[in-house]
Length: 177
Image (cartoon, rainbow, N blue to C red; front, side):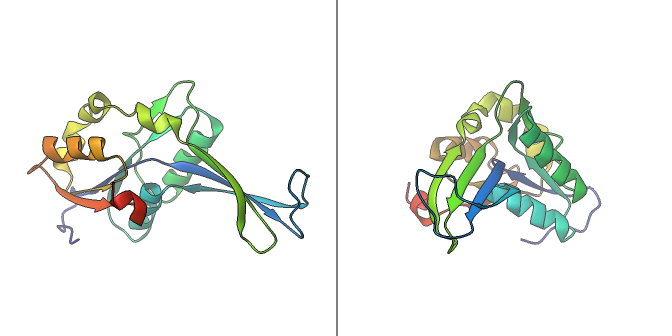
Protein backbone atom coordinates (compact mmCIF):
# COMPACT_ATOMS: atom_id res chain seq x y z
CA UNK A 1 0.00 0.00 0.00
CA UNK A 2 1.69 3.15 -1.21
CA UNK A 3 0.22 6.46 -0.13
CA UNK A 4 0.40 9.62 -2.24
CA UNK A 5 2.77 12.12 -0.66
CA UNK A 6 0.15 14.79 -0.13
CA UNK A 7 -0.62 16.52 3.17
CA UNK A 8 -4.34 15.92 2.65
CA UNK A 9 -4.16 12.22 1.81
CA UNK A 10 -5.09 9.70 4.47
CA UNK A 11 -5.85 6.06 5.00
CA UNK A 12 -9.16 5.19 6.61
CA UNK A 13 -9.50 2.18 8.87
CA UNK A 14 -12.99 0.94 9.75
CA UNK A 15 -13.68 -1.65 12.44
CA UNK A 16 -14.41 -2.25 16.07
CA UNK A 17 -12.31 -1.25 19.02
CA UNK A 18 -12.14 -3.68 21.90
CA UNK A 19 -11.18 -2.93 25.48
CA UNK A 20 -9.06 -5.92 26.57
CA UNK A 21 -8.88 -7.12 30.16
CA UNK A 22 -6.48 -9.96 30.97
CA UNK A 23 -6.19 -11.72 34.31
CA UNK A 24 -2.93 -13.65 34.81
CA UNK A 25 -2.87 -16.29 37.54
CA UNK A 26 0.44 -16.43 39.41
CA UNK A 27 0.39 -20.14 40.18
CA UNK A 28 -1.80 -23.21 39.91
CA UNK A 29 -4.98 -21.79 38.39
CA UNK A 30 -7.99 -23.11 40.31
CA UNK A 31 -11.42 -22.95 38.71
CA UNK A 32 -14.30 -21.69 40.86
CA UNK A 33 -11.85 -19.85 43.13
CA UNK A 34 -10.27 -16.44 43.49
CA UNK A 35 -6.77 -16.81 42.04
CA UNK A 36 -3.93 -14.52 43.09
CA UNK A 37 -2.44 -12.78 40.06
CA UNK A 38 -2.30 -9.56 38.14
CA UNK A 39 -4.73 -7.79 35.83
CA UNK A 40 -3.73 -5.89 32.70
CA UNK A 41 -5.95 -3.71 30.52
CA UNK A 42 -5.20 -2.54 27.00
CA UNK A 43 -6.86 -1.19 23.90
CA UNK A 44 -7.35 -3.81 21.22
CA UNK A 45 -9.33 -4.97 18.24
CA UNK A 46 -7.60 -5.98 15.01
CA UNK A 47 -8.60 -2.88 13.05
CA UNK A 48 -7.89 -0.56 15.98
CA UNK A 49 -4.44 -2.12 16.30
CA UNK A 50 -3.81 -1.65 12.57
CA UNK A 51 -4.91 1.99 12.76
CA UNK A 52 -2.73 2.72 15.79
CA UNK A 53 0.34 1.14 14.22
CA UNK A 54 -0.17 3.01 10.95
CA UNK A 55 -0.40 6.25 12.90
CA UNK A 56 2.72 5.38 14.89
CA UNK A 57 4.78 4.95 11.71
CA UNK A 58 3.65 8.30 10.35
CA UNK A 59 0.76 7.39 8.03
CA UNK A 60 -2.00 10.00 8.20
CA UNK A 61 -4.76 7.71 9.50
CA UNK A 62 -8.42 8.14 10.35
CA UNK A 63 -10.17 5.38 12.27
CA UNK A 64 -13.93 4.97 12.36
CA UNK A 65 -15.16 2.70 15.12
CA UNK A 66 -18.09 2.30 17.48
CA UNK A 67 -17.77 2.90 21.20
CA UNK A 68 -19.99 3.25 24.23
CA UNK A 69 -19.99 6.52 26.14
CA UNK A 70 -18.41 4.69 29.09
CA UNK A 71 -14.96 4.87 30.70
CA UNK A 72 -13.66 2.10 28.40
CA UNK A 73 -14.62 4.11 25.31
CA UNK A 74 -13.06 7.23 26.81
CA UNK A 75 -9.84 5.28 27.45
CA UNK A 76 -9.71 4.11 23.82
CA UNK A 77 -10.25 7.67 22.55
CA UNK A 78 -7.59 9.02 24.94
CA UNK A 79 -5.09 6.39 23.76
CA UNK A 80 -5.80 7.24 20.10
CA UNK A 81 -5.19 10.93 20.76
CA UNK A 82 -1.86 10.11 22.46
CA UNK A 83 -0.56 8.39 19.30
CA UNK A 84 -2.03 10.94 16.86
CA UNK A 85 -4.82 8.68 15.61
CA UNK A 86 -7.92 10.56 14.43
CA UNK A 87 -11.07 8.84 15.75
CA UNK A 88 -13.24 11.95 15.55
CA UNK A 89 -15.69 10.34 13.11
CA UNK A 90 -16.38 7.32 15.29
CA UNK A 91 -19.88 6.55 16.52
CA UNK A 92 -20.23 6.95 20.30
CA UNK A 93 -23.46 5.35 21.51
CA UNK A 94 -25.10 7.01 24.49
CA UNK A 95 -25.58 4.41 27.23
CA UNK A 96 -23.66 1.83 25.18
CA UNK A 97 -21.04 -0.57 26.49
CA UNK A 98 -17.76 -0.41 24.57
CA UNK A 99 -16.88 -3.84 23.13
CA UNK A 100 -14.89 -5.68 25.78
CA UNK A 101 -12.84 -8.88 25.94
CA UNK A 102 -12.11 -10.48 29.31
CA UNK A 103 -9.67 -13.40 29.46
CA UNK A 104 -8.34 -15.44 32.36
CA UNK A 105 -4.95 -17.02 31.82
CA UNK A 106 -3.28 -19.71 33.89
CA UNK A 107 0.26 -19.60 35.27
CA UNK A 108 1.60 -20.72 31.85
CA UNK A 109 -0.16 -17.91 30.01
CA UNK A 110 -2.77 -20.27 28.50
CA UNK A 111 -6.33 -19.02 28.34
CA UNK A 112 -8.64 -20.98 30.62
CA UNK A 113 -11.74 -18.84 30.09
CA UNK A 114 -12.91 -15.74 28.27
CA UNK A 115 -15.97 -13.61 27.72
CA UNK A 116 -16.38 -11.20 24.82
CA UNK A 117 -19.04 -8.52 24.59
CA UNK A 118 -19.27 -7.07 21.08
CA UNK A 119 -23.02 -6.53 20.98
CA UNK A 120 -22.55 -2.79 20.34
CA UNK A 121 -20.66 -3.48 17.09
CA UNK A 122 -23.92 -4.52 15.41
CA UNK A 123 -25.33 -1.02 15.94
CA UNK A 124 -23.12 0.46 13.23
CA UNK A 125 -25.74 0.53 10.48
CA UNK A 126 -25.50 1.27 6.77
CA UNK A 127 -27.12 4.63 7.50
CA UNK A 128 -24.45 5.49 10.10
CA UNK A 129 -21.74 4.51 7.64
CA UNK A 130 -23.29 6.58 4.86
CA UNK A 131 -23.27 9.66 7.11
CA UNK A 132 -19.49 9.35 6.74
CA UNK A 133 -19.56 8.92 2.92
CA UNK A 134 -17.37 11.95 2.26
CA UNK A 135 -14.65 10.62 4.59
CA UNK A 136 -14.76 7.23 2.87
CA UNK A 137 -14.75 8.67 -0.65
CA UNK A 138 -11.84 11.02 0.10
CA UNK A 139 -9.67 8.30 1.66
CA UNK A 140 -6.84 7.02 -0.46
CA UNK A 141 -7.40 3.57 1.05
CA UNK A 142 -10.06 2.05 3.28
CA UNK A 143 -8.85 -0.81 5.46
CA UNK A 144 -11.59 -2.89 7.04
CA UNK A 145 -12.17 -6.18 8.77
CA UNK A 146 -13.89 -8.81 6.69
CA UNK A 147 -15.73 -10.63 9.46
CA UNK A 148 -19.23 -9.30 8.65
CA UNK A 149 -19.86 -10.40 5.03
CA UNK A 150 -23.23 -8.61 4.52
CA UNK A 151 -21.81 -5.30 5.82
CA UNK A 152 -18.61 -5.80 3.83
CA UNK A 153 -20.59 -6.46 0.66
CA UNK A 154 -22.55 -3.24 1.22
CA UNK A 155 -19.37 -1.19 1.67
CA UNK A 156 -17.63 -2.66 -1.35
CA UNK A 157 -20.63 -2.13 -3.64
CA UNK A 158 -21.56 1.34 -2.37
CA UNK A 159 -18.02 2.80 -2.45
CA UNK A 160 -16.58 0.82 -5.39
CA UNK A 161 -14.38 3.08 -7.51
CA UNK A 162 -14.39 5.85 -4.89
CA UNK A 163 -11.48 4.51 -2.81
CA UNK A 164 -9.16 1.50 -2.78
CA UNK A 165 -9.90 -1.30 -0.32
CA UNK A 166 -7.66 -3.42 1.87
CA UNK A 167 -9.49 -6.29 3.57
CA UNK A 168 -8.32 -8.05 6.71
CA UNK A 169 -10.25 -11.26 7.41
CA UNK A 170 -9.21 -11.14 11.10
CA UNK A 171 -8.87 -14.95 11.22
CA UNK A 172 -8.64 -17.90 8.84
CA UNK A 173 -12.00 -19.21 10.03
CA UNK A 174 -13.73 -15.90 9.34
CA UNK A 175 -12.13 -15.66 5.90
CA UNK A 176 -14.13 -18.74 4.86
CA UNK A 177 -17.51 -17.18 5.74
